[in-house]
Structure formats: structure tokens, C-alpha cells
Length: 388
Image 1 (tube, rainbow, N blue to C red):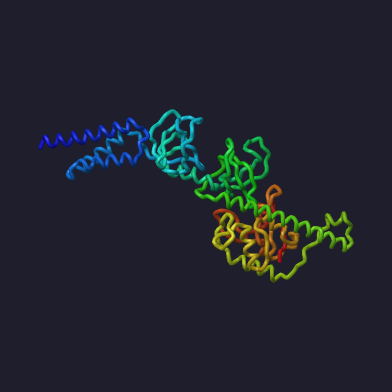
Image 2 (cartoon, rainbow, N blue to C red):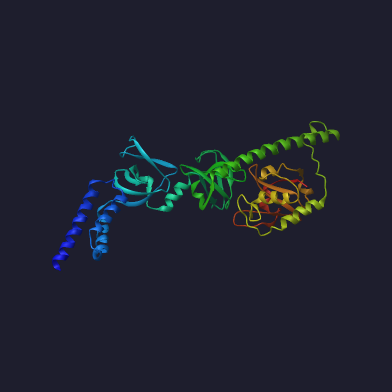
């Protein structure tokens, strides 16, 4: 029995030494080949010792080999090189978050096995953290969202430098889309018009939420189109108003400054808009939301107006030019009231009367009724229009 035990151990040792020698000679040995050798080795053992020999063999291989499972941490694809050099020939590619095995390590480079192909890649393109790899891969066709954490908001600059010109601001709690980074600054798209700018990177909290690049780029195209249409309509309305004022006896110079209140119109139509909007009290704010599942401010206005047979553009800045201007003193239920910051329209609500509006305020809030006479709103009031 003792001799039999020694004989078995000798057989296992020979198999282990042979297999380990194979791995030491060839750093690019495929995992399937390793498994095949294990399987062939098992066939030489009796059923009574197969499990023990197999486990010992695998453990020895794991301890002696440099094989480590990992993931490609790249955005898009990167080349596999024949040698650890940027100038080396490419023998294939690996894609973001793709499974791989690290075969060996050299200064600044890993030799990896990807889908049966062995080659060299820079070390910073490999990670053992699957989530990190998936995040890098997703950046290829997605933008990440973030929330402004500073209570005082952030200055938006024209480029990624503290000396760059200020082009706007974002408020605490605002959602933005992350496009890129530049030094200590993050390139963002912000506001309903998805305006481009840079903010300091310490004032943002990155959300675990993504939006496809195609979706964002399509939205930007639609916004540009709506703005062009709104601008054309505004110019047509201005000319029509100038002609009307001229017919009333105003000179050409006076028509530029003359203010005439919008006619009262059918107040029942305005009240119908308010009644429709009230049905959605309590609906959560959702950036880009245009349905009862969630609204942003202009999405609520567009949806409610559509329910009442009125077509208005998608974004607040364009909605500002969608009707006849009305003075604050002549506001009536159903009028659209606008608010801005630095000459930019940033918010819209539906006037309900008695100094109040119904609106979708911001992330984390719901559709509700608020005063337009608070110091915050008064300072940002940017006019009103009547679309009914």
C-alpha cells in the first residue's frame, strides 16, 4: 500500500512538473490549453484519486503561473502589440470591459490574453475592478450626469481655467451632463438649452446615471432648430406689432419702445390650462421629462398646452417667444411666466393667479404651486407671454 501511495504521488509530481515547465517556457499559453492538459492528466489517474490530483495540480499551476483574470479599462478599443512598445506592430484589439488574462508584467506594460489573442497593452488599460472597466467602456457612447453640490452654485467659464471668462452660472441642485475634463475643470452641458461650459470639478457629485451621446446630440439639434423657428416667429411678431402701432399713429422710432398690453382674450382658455396643470401636482421633477411619469419645467408647460390644443416649443427660452408679451401687472391665469439668470432663461411656470404659479422646480422636488413674489423669483423675473 505504501509503495502504491508513493507511485501515485510520483505520477502526480511528474504531471505537475511537466505542466509547470510548459507554463514557464511559454508565457502566452492559452487557458484552454491549460485546461486540456489538466483533463489529459486526469485520464491517467484512477477514479479514486482523480479529484485530489486535479485540485493539487490546479493549485500548483495557480501558484506558479502569472495568470490573473482582469478587464480592459478602455473607452472604445485599443491595440494589442507584439512587444511592449508603442512602435510595435498591432496584432489585434481589445474593447472596453472585455475579459482578459494577464500573462506577464513588464515595466509599464502587461502581456494579456484577449479572446485567444496574446499581446501587450499599457498597464493603465487593465483593471481587476469590473465596475471600473464598465464605467470606462460606457463613456464611449454615453455621457455621465452630475449634480451641483455647492449651495452658492458654480461659475460657468468659457474654458477650463480660473482666468477664463464667465459665461453663466449653475445653481445648487442643478443637474448637468459631463462631457470631458480639462485640468481642474469639468466640461459640462447645462440648462434646458444644454449650453456648453466649464466648472470647477470640486463642486459636482457624479450620479450613477448616464445618457446616450446620440440622445444628447439630437436634443441639441432640436433645440437649435426650435430657437431658429422661435426667433423667426418673434421677428414676424415684432414687425406685425410695429405695423399695428404705426396704424395707431406711433412713429417708427416710437414703435421700438411703445408697450401695449396683451388683450384679455378668453379667460376660460387660460383657466383651462391651469386646471390641466393642477392634475399633475405631486408628479416628480425629472430632467428632460415630458410626461406624467416626470416633468421638467418646460416639459410640463409643453404637455399641458398640448392638452389644450396649443403648440409651444420644447425649451423655456423658445417658449418665451411663443406668444404675446404681457406685463406683470396684467398677468392672468394660464399665462407663462419666465425667470432667468445673466440674461439667460432658466425656468418657466404657469401663472395660476394671486401671485402664484404652478411649475416643476428642480431635481428632488415635485410639480407644485409657488409664489412668483419671493425675493428669489422677483430678482430673476424675465417676463410673461400669453399663448391662449
